[in-house]
Length: 177
Image (tube, rainbow, N blue to C red):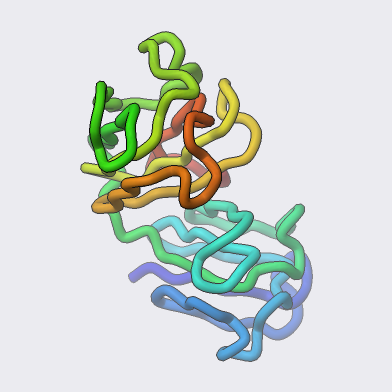
């Protein structure tokens, strides 16, 4: 069984609340913007600064996370990573609606220009795993997360058209991303 336990104080102190599945808004649980440390058991969890699994995020792997850094007292929603993290695969498309030249990516790629695809992506389909998309090379800058089965047909919708420069496949061994 996978679960995440949120604590109201650093180092697993104070009131705590545990969750076994996704939560779109921790306000419903009376625990929004409260967590200062987390314990993860089983699979990875994604914690977000906004409700409905949006905004700034951090991925926590199994273990104790005594300090949340820039998400301290800012966690508003949670998502359990249910996807299998082996054999990751994402298809990137130059044009919206999965048109134009495409690239099938099977591993973390620090610079999409090596495959002739830096700053050219306008849509994608995730075939397997969980992927973190970065605006800059070497997994830096603003980022988004996408899950197996996601099909984003138009990067214009969120201001990322022709801005994707690197991608990272979430690995089972990741402690914090």
